[in-house]
Image: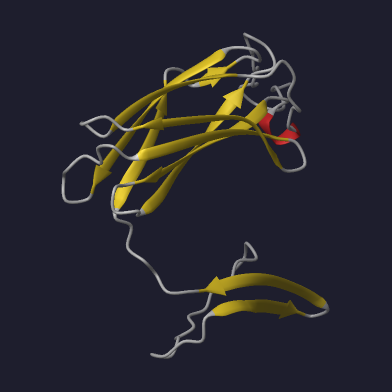
Length: 171
C-alpha cells in the first residue's frame, strides 16, 4: 500500500508440523525475518484478571491490587494457588518481588507489592518506567493460567504536556 503495508494469507495443512518456523519478506535488497512458533492451541480453562488501585505509581509506593479468577462457565476458581511476580524493565524484565497466596471462595485474591526506589526510565514512555505484574494461578485440577498487566511508574508526581494548537501561527 502507499503506507508500506502488505499482507497475505497462508493456508496451513490439516496435519501441521509443530515447532519454530521463520517467515521472511523481501523487497529489493531489503530482507526482514521473524520467527514464529506453531503449536497446538489449548483453550484456557479459566480467566485471570489483575486490577490495581491506581493507574500509575511513584517509586517506593505500595501497589495494592486484586486478582479475580473465574472459570469460563461462570464458577469461581476457589482455593487456587497464586504466584504474583513484579518485574521492572530496563534492557529486559528483572523480577524484584514475588507474592504467594490463594484465591478465596469467590475466586479473589488481594495483594500488596512495595516498589523499589530506582527505576530505568524509558524514552518511549517519556522517561517513565514500566513494571510488569504477572499472576500465575493453578487450580485444584492442576490447570495453570496466567494474567499480565503493565504499570506505569512515573518519574514525577505531576506531568505537564503542552501541545500547540497548530505548528505554524498565521502571519
